Length: 589
Image 1 (cartoon, rainbow, N blue to C red):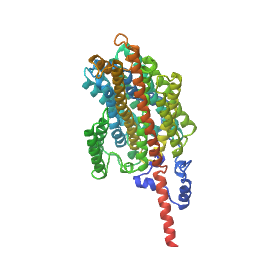
Image 2 (cartoon, helix red, strand yellow; image 1 turned 90 degrees about the horizontal axis):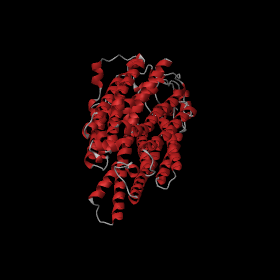
Image 3 (cartoon, helix red, strand yellow; image 1 turned 120 degrees about the horizontal axis):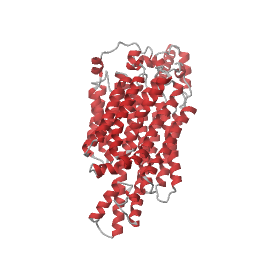
Image 4 (cartoon, rainbow, N blue to C red; image 1 turned 60 degrees about the vertical axis):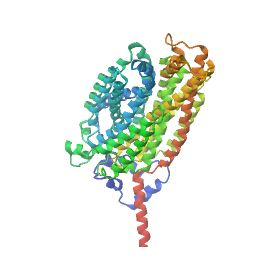
């Protein structure tokens, strides 16, 4: 069960946290009986703490925190979707037409890799302490990317931005846990998701509109100053009580900075980051066996270190690493976000290359979809998620509905599909996604051990970012292989030759590089009707292949989430005590 202020008070260790407050077998029996159903409606544990946030703040502070955090989340997400709209100009200026997928993938890999470390640092130091380095890294990376004259320098900037983005991901969840009561938590999670989805949707549209007017460099350096101001505003608005870790607030002896630094699991952090980076890099574009094998070796080393050398202060608590429910829930999110990211990334490309829409119109389709996502999260938080606890059945049903939308969109990826039908389906997919994300986060808090929420939610966010990286890496690999194959086959059939000539090869490369060239090449590229038809069908077929893969993956997501279960550590401890008590009674009898 997700811990709160009532759980933390007087909690010297995780073991006593699990067993504290159980003093009478009557209460235990009633509690265990009420926990036999997967769709738990209420528990003694859920109802006992007061519905109050850990930290109380004024309305003015809450508005300042909300605005500052919104700005950070907004820019964190625009740097995912916006790159799809300007990758053609970036590739041309940086002389890297074959490296376009790394523009987004590098950012997502860096963010996913460092999110667990950011969660651990928030636990060791305090949630407030991670705000300044987050804002500085994000701002510095934006400035560096804006001044890049080569692909390598731009990648360094994107990686630094991703490091800052990891802190934003952690802050957005931690501050909800700390500053919102249980009954408001569902709505607040919906509001955070609304900020994320707004950034994703508006990012594509804004980049598509502004890039032709001001160029891509100002899109990055303008972020730098804004991010610093938002970070400063957030830091100053947070209450002083958030400047110390939860352990010190619970009465434990304060640790010096030196002791806190000494408690960080540096080896575990390095191995975890290395594992994620190698694994995601191995799946970027074509599958690369060497980094994939190295990532498996690094993972084994990480597990060994966490359970032996770093057992006292692991980067991820052992109770989290050994929790079936948490790990399977994280894997479920990986698959779900992989599918969702394919919708986010390839919907604008479908509108550009298949429907012939303008860049602004193509990007704006995501606005409607993500408005629907925001509404889904907010409505389910307001109408249904009004308590802490298990949402097992509701979560499974919503995931099934989402997978149906993936399959429907795959079958609609054809040039003959009416635009309004496609857009309505994309919007419904977004609405269901908002519901799933809200249910999933509240449910994993239910499955968490006391005092591990920061790390659990950061691991949860890591796998979501992991899924976003999967969506771009694996989706990009599927997409470009199918598209290249279709373009080559189409032009060979059109020309009636056995091999493509130099001009055709250049045409294929340019069409792979920029989907807007299919309909809006202007003086740069004028396609004949037959050539355009080949390009349109190639893009439609490639996108259909990506979304069919997402639909197949969705079936496995349902199975994995079902296996995660609905029983919290608190309930498991209660049942264990009940069994022990019954065994003692049988022995006495």
